[in-house]
Image (cartoon, rainbow, N blue to C red; front, side):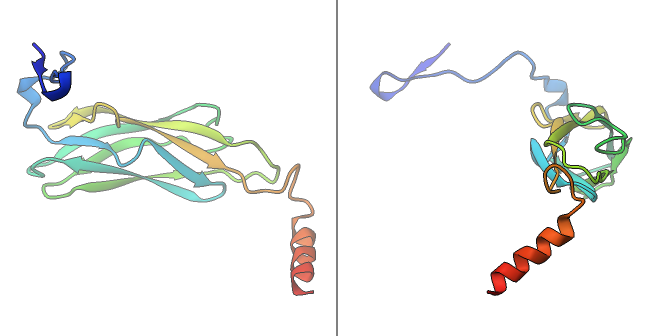
Length: 157
């Protein structure tokens, strides 16, 4: 039942029925951000944090999932298990981003955490998106070196 506060405001605790008292004391694994931004042609790191007592080993499975960016075209599909030993609060997932000589629009894909063991997953940050930014010249990078040299010569005058 909502509680009445000053000036006619009502307070009601948020509860959607998903709270599980059995898991209330378990540590939480979740991404450090909902959206990450990666440059093309580099290995990108997505961070996962552990919240709670940090006691005992916990683990979960992770995997990439296609969005507008396709595995094998914009990034390399990865999956595996993240293991957090006792006292460990952060782990990283390395995802190779594939370079293309042609310009392409910003593409994105997802990384998912699933199948927790000894912990629970964050309600909202168990999925993150990775946006891959292409910094190539439009429509291709064929003349990129010449363009850079011309820009440098203009800046020197």
